[in-house]
Amino acid sequence: MTTNQSMIDNIIRIVLIALIVAWSAMIIAPFVSILLWGIIIAVSAYPAFVWLVGKLGGRAGLAATIFVVLMLTLIIGPIAGSVPGFTDSIRDLAGQIQSGSLAIPEASDAVKQWPVIGEQLFQFWQQAATNLTELLVRFQPQLRGASVSVLSSIAAAGLAVLQFVAAVIVAGVILAHHERAAALANQLVQRIVPESRERYVSLAENTVRGVTMGVIGVAIVQSILAGIGFAVIGVPAAALWAFICLVLAVLQISMAVVIIPIAIYVFSNHELLPSLLFVAWNIPVVALDNVLKPILMGRGVDAPMLVIFIGAIGGFISFGFLGLFFGAVVLVIAYDLLIVWLDEITAESANIAD
Image 1 (cartoon, rainbow, N blue to C red):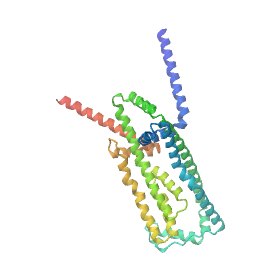
Image 2 (image 1 turned 135 degrees about the vertical axis):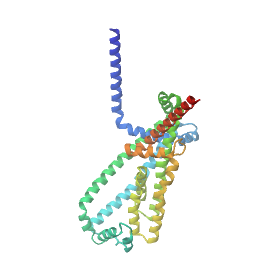
Image 3 (image 1 turned 90 degrees about the horizontal axis):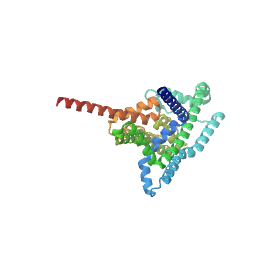
Image 4 (image 1 turned 90 degrees about the vertical axis):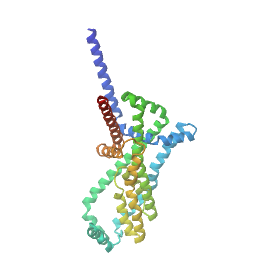
């Protein structure tokens, strides 16, 4: 009877624990991406945060507050500064289309000589210049569908910005209590791999920072350089276009998606020499990630660059943007475990041979 009662008690405990875990997972599910982003931001910013804490005399709370304010300024500033001008440009454009006063310059004969798309682009451009209203009526279904897609994308982008703002605040809280957070992380890893805790904690930290520098760091550099080009040539809402370039680069989408239409706009509104200089400036800007990304992603990580790159890109394809970081971390750890396992087999074979 005592044995049966003990078994029943254990079953009840297991069921209750399972229910608590399931309910906890359901409660925290809407915030998982924000928490993970907060952890990634905190890990990436930790070296700079430690430096700031030293400059502030060890006041971690103040350093975390400065970090959050600075990050939110960098995120919200370009949007808040560019949206009014961008809205005015859209309003003026819509008014000109409705009144029929929108004037599009005729295409240059040189456009015909462009490879592959030259002839089709010339015909399309000429029709837009001579009879824009008819062209808009012709493509009205496509434009309606495109406008719905654009509005959906803008709404999704707005939600992503709000989530990122929340993640920055979470990162600030983690950094403010970094000692307790580090102890918790160490205890967790200690339970999983007690013999190599420090190694795998360091490996995960360095991988996250390497991917952050290789993806977000390069994207920031590219978007700043692109924004300089937009501002110098006089593109309307240059800061907002630069911010869109930043988002695209972070999402591993080529900034050429934005730069090519802007280059066409520049060629249609500026002299040939400034337009060519604009293109010459942006060609290396677009290609910059191909040079810097491999260098920065593998920096400080004891794993081949190919493993990190495959983990980041494969994780992105399979799990979205968060997969960029966790895919790289998982594959690097898997590679390290594989190497350790192979080394153990080699050592055992050597011992048997002796």
